[in-house]
Length: 74
Image (cartoon, rainbow, N blue to C red; front, side):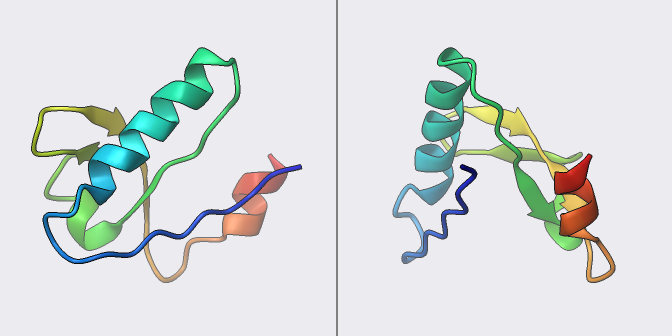
């Protein structure tokens, strides 16, 4: 069954790095992941989540109108 994880922490705590590491681990096990990024950040980063140590992955840019349920059904 699908799960939604929410992580929060102070700045410079490695949240993006942990996310990208988990994404990689799921991919290595042939499991599909969806990464989302808010529009204000996604426009600046060309739709990528990038960590300070150089890891990066494509993400889906979302705004207030984005329908997550429709994305998950498809």
